[in-house]
Length: 227
Image 1: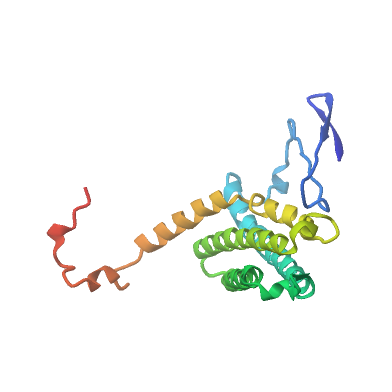
Image 2 (image 1 turned 45 degrees about the vertical axis):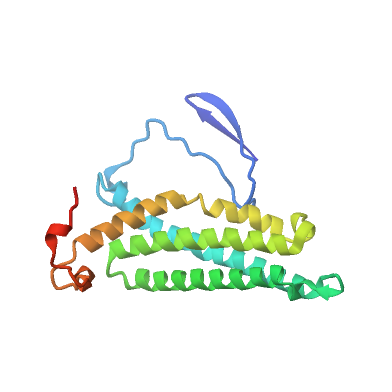
């Protein structure tokens, strides 16, 4: 895909080759000396970060939900294939090396689906922005990682034919890889998750039960040395 732009008065041609998600375009937008009238200001001046984080909630939810779709499709293909393909006179689904991959994949997929649905409910309530940020980050990180693992296992079940374009598994694998990068990498999700949880836990009032006190000798403060 070629994109021609003028950068500082010079015509520049960019070539973007996409490994996956080829149904979507990629390109750059360049602004030079752009002036925006005050009446066209979106939000308040200096609050771009706040707007960005609000925008990332539905963006990352879309990434998480989309990853579930990729994983579900790959697993269904692998299950149907394993019920047809035979080796040593038996359907390959009868071998634990295959059937256990199906069991693990389905368990991971259901866990990711549950987290995404629960997160969507929190976002819809709109009551706690910090909780929404944390859970969206968890959902995006977990669902995209699960999709990558499930598609990999699906390709393993199909074997060599899964690496070809006779089945869509190879495309799903390429598409799933991007999901762990775009709209915030998994590492950025980790940064948000731990930050929000530290802030949430350490700001709880005295009315919250402190499980640390359940120890038999929890009152021996002289034993609790932190430096």
